[in-house]
Image (tube, rainbow, N blue to C red; front, side, top):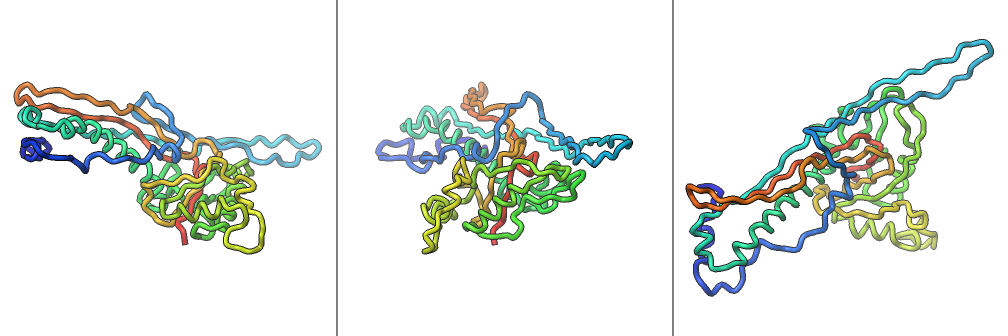
Length: 304
């Protein structure tokens, strides 16, 4: 039967003399998806975030004229539909009885938990990996990073670096300036500031050279490193081992309701035995969702 672990799966386990069983258990990275999203719990099948517009600037009221009364409207609607992920294994009664090595049979649950954690990291990172892919859109009908996020009263807005560029001191400064010029849906400036820089492993060394050097990087001008001096990323540099684009990079901001993650059901592990076959079953299950509500919470570029 497909998916059933029998004595034939690893026949060496039936005989003494094996020094070590390897390949299943490795050290793993600490959880990285919490750096990418703000987490909340949910008690229903989906969650919805609904945008409501603010008011515009107040016009001059000339003497004797009536006050201008502004209105508001509903904007984009973002739905987080929680997706279930599950994985398990079946072991025959004979395999459990005849297997001579506890290191094989007793580490299966740990291996299953590892697979579930890896799944979650990949699902989370894929929101960023697909940031420029028009197949994957969000509540406002655009991609995660776009130059054409629609607003109700201020035309389109962008959370994409104006000129695509690889990671450098100059490109970071340009993105920070762009973040600090962020407007709401009625075209009024808001206090948007960078929080953290998110990079693939390929940019780890370059990011640290740029951000952590005391003086300006790659110059003999003896100028201070303004990025470090001003602590432009108060939450630091966050490397993600599941990013697939080697030169794309992102900056999360302090704007609320940006990158969001809902946990509907935390990971649970269950096991049971089948009466007819005497096979042992074990399975892990969890349900969650990842996405973006307000594009102002994330800025990025695909690199040059």
